[in-house]
Length: 291
Image 1 (cartoon, rainbow, N blue to C red):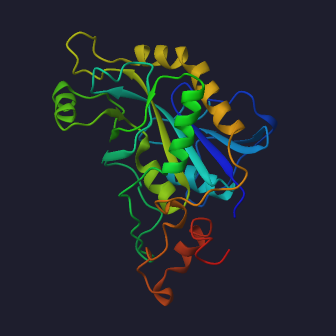
Image 2 (image 1 turned 120 degrees about the vertical axis):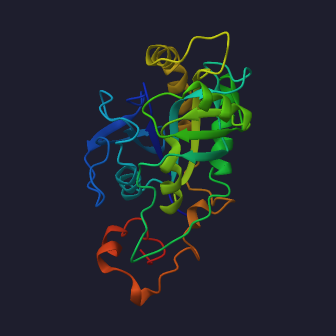
Image 3 (image 1 turned 90 degrees about the horizontal axis):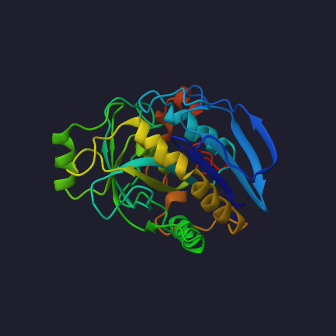
């Protein structure tokens, strides 16, 4: 068994993790460039945790300029086995109201300007994204939300748009008609990269608005989004504290194979693999390389 280390990636309004002890900050070097910020290492009870603000402290980075590969690689190098993403999102359904937490289980990727894989020419790999969320990790989040009496639902489809602009009215109506539940700007390619890095991944999507489809609500703007995020920051902290306090000491094997995603995924023959790319993949491919 592998020791469990829980990573937290905080989105808009979530720039630190209250309650951590034995804190140290470290700039982890990644071969893909700079992560969003220093990693914050600490403990919550007996649980080892690593926190990273996705947009950097002070919210310096837009969704399209975040170096997702560097962020996930840094988490992998830090020993993270289970990664919880917290982000703001818009809702396409009246019952998914602002302040509700949606533990999504599916994604639709509408991004187009981001590096979405660690692999490429010289080492080709195709991992499965059929079930992108690690079910045991998501179940632990749901149990913590229930214990803390936090309003939540345990499934949903998250469509990830490129941004940084919010949706047009036509786009909002299209996504709603398709049956999607929420929309955000950061889950992709984060979830794909976590799968390639064999890290179990789950998303807490906090509803902040009704996008722009709802006839009885004003069009979404960042002031309204941040107001809801700030109002619920203590709720996020309670949720994460409960999760970390009750997390098992050892990583539980993932039923959908997120922690063994590279098994049979790499197509390039060993003697045809690019040595320079393999150097950059040292953390991502550590298990399959016998590390």
